[in-house]
Length: 80
Image (cartoon, rainbow, N blue to C red; front, side, top):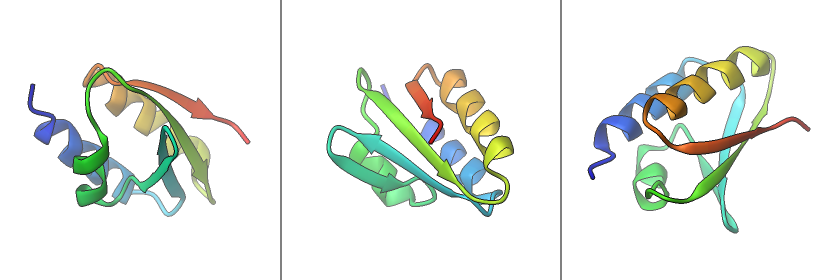
């Protein structure tokens, strides 16, 4: 399955926010605004944690959770 559409949509969604949005996969931390980082990290079947910090974090969390769910990617949004 190609995740290209998911990756582009995720990074575009993240780019709309000023908050820092970081995806944790195993022991790797990836800036979600980085398409290249997502390509090397986002593979099916993993569960991911999303860490969001910044002035628009609540809106960013909701938007990112929706995009991940749309593409059937398993994600937990971590509230610090």
